[in-house]
Amino acid sequence: MNRQALKEQIFSKGSYLCVGLDTDIRKLPASVRGEKDPVFAFNRRIIDATADYCVAYKPNLAFYESLGAAGWESLARTVEYIPKNIFTIADAKRGDIGNTSAMYARTFFEQYAFDSVTVAPYMGSDSVQPFLGYEGKWVILLALTSNDGSRDFQQLSVSPEGHPLYRVVMERAMQWATPEQLMFVVGATQAEYLAEIRSFAPEHFLLVPGYGAQGGDLQAVSRAGLTKDGGLLVNSSRAIIYASDGSDFDKEAGKKAKEIAAEMQRYLELYGQ
Image 1: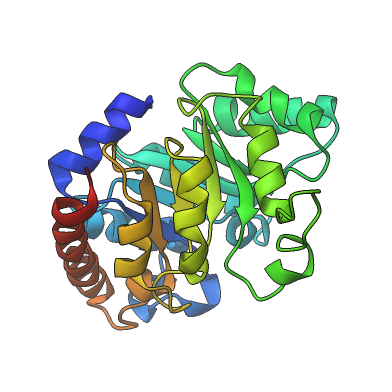
Image 2: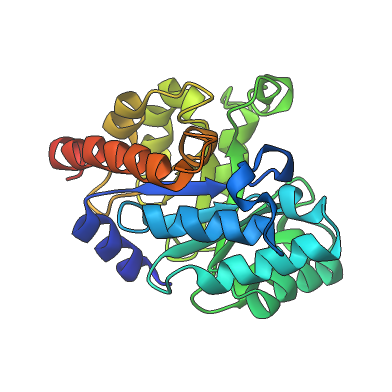
């Protein structure tokens, strides 16, 4: 999916919601546990209930890999089921020497046909470039994450100007690809840094995890991060998919997604210009 199509989705739906499919088999409601593929059965009902209110889905690969071959099959069925006009993110956090990254890129862009993949930048440009060789596909580079440990490295001052490492990473990565193909991860719990990030990365889309169960402030993120093209994909996982553990889990997930999307529409009108 190219940038224009993503922008059109955001403004036609009045939403920049990304639903995280962090599907933990240990948390599945009893109503799907007896299914032949309970993970896919759960995801299918979540997708059916939320597709009208979100513009992206983000399966977290760890939840599928932990199940071995069956998990990869559930993932394949899930990605195939997602409507083709909704952006898909392989939350894989890959990044290795060039030849290995090329295989990761083949996995997620050819075998599973994701629109994008999250990539760790620590090994530098040659670990990222293989992912950038696919037309219409995106790299979402880890920059400033929402976990407490982000302070250990990402926020260290490392340049003569006193810039933190995450800014150095972002500015270097912006030399590798345009805003048509490169996004950055900036956690919702780091909202106070968004205005500064927009000062040097005004055009790049940002994937913003950490809203919902992790306590990110949607209004603060939206005020600082929205652009005329939308510019944000704000992810919520547990707060939506586990809104209920009963047989009505999909209906409750849909209600929660609709509630978030309605709030986002207000912020698009206020700040998305």
